[in-house]
Amino acid sequence: MEQDKLLTLVFTFLLLCLTVIDTASDAANKGVYKVYSSGVPCIIVQADIYLYLTYQTSDSEKDVVVHVPTSSTADTAVSTCDTYIATAGMSVPAQLLRINLYHMAGWTIDLGFTEDKRFKTEGKEFTLFQVNVTANFSSDPSSFPNAKYPTQSYNLHIDPNNLSDLSGSIYADIGNSYYCPSEQKYAINDDVAYIKFKLTTIQAYMKSASFGPKQVCPSDENTTDLVPIIVGSALAGLIVLTLVVYLIYRIFLPEEVLNLVNPDSHFGSDSGNELSKDDILERF
Image (cartoon, rainbow, N blue to C red):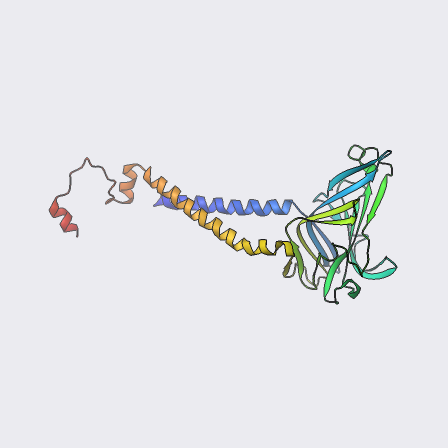
């Protein structure tokens, strides 16, 4: 019986290890950026972010992909929970997150959120309406060779009457969070700059320290519905595997061990005296 308990403990430990590794892997693959007001976050962006940029060289153009290091941080001097952003001839009440890219001097990403009704929020939702990227190509000449301009800015065009794909996609009710694990790529400047998010959870205009209920992006709604089925199937498979291993384990146990566990086991040695008919009847 001690061997059975040990086997059960081993499989339980393996299952816990798989869960911890999977969670740790997800956490390591995304950055977390927070903007605070009076000790409480008003914005939390949790995502793995990529930039797809085209920059001018001395004689042509060059396309590059920049992965935003997950150790990048929010710029506390610029990020704010209460500001106005002047754009497209408008002054938009907003909350602003500026991300400083780790070990990439002069590289920043500005994410502007608003609940302004001009952006189809009806005053009950927040939306990501602005993305500005500042790229300091001179900070790493080996990665960005022959840059004609040391620094370039990429700004999302804003028109409340014609919302960008990004503004029309990344939004949620106030008090809820936008949740989208799959990859989503949006244009900043057509054919010149794009931003890609994955493993994304975003919330602005927060009133508490943790994410509110998730509002799943359309592309992940079906995937999210399948999660319980996938988890259940995986657990069922693990149970079957455990049973198979246990049976194999029992088959290869020495006869002496089996006799200790179950003296009446039919696996006992045939070398001993056979039971008489009377002995067998007496047992029943």
